[in-house]
Image (tube, rainbow, N blue to C red; front, side, top):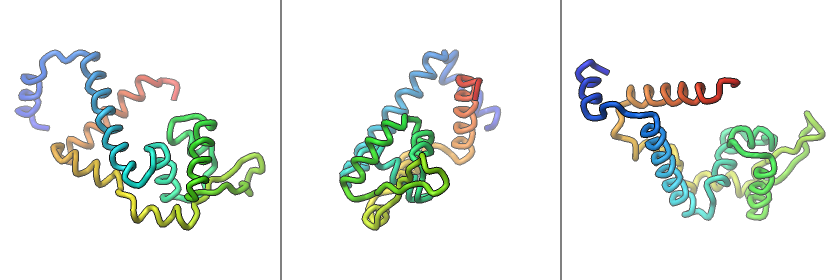
Length: 155
């Protein structure tokens, strides 16, 4: 970012408070949740169901614990999501051969096929965020990660 751009930003947003920044983050998160709901509703899924399926499309046969950790929820919540996806015929449970106390979520053929008829949220995010240059997008990611790290110092 050039000095001229920085000065322009500071002129437009002088003395932004942390409260205002967190308000913008919350507003952005709310908009993203709205986009997610609208997008996945077209195929009869909820955002958490899509999140589980998306992770399984990337790498099948995942332990419930890994899904819960990645989606920032409890194992009980993942169990409920898997129950629903199992009733819909998209996933099934399988004992974990590496840990008999653990169960794996596994895609069915129908669950794998759903990937081709489900709009990828990544492409939707990319099209809705075209106002950011690639460098700005990288900077935003860096700054948000830095902010999250400062809010979770033990991690």
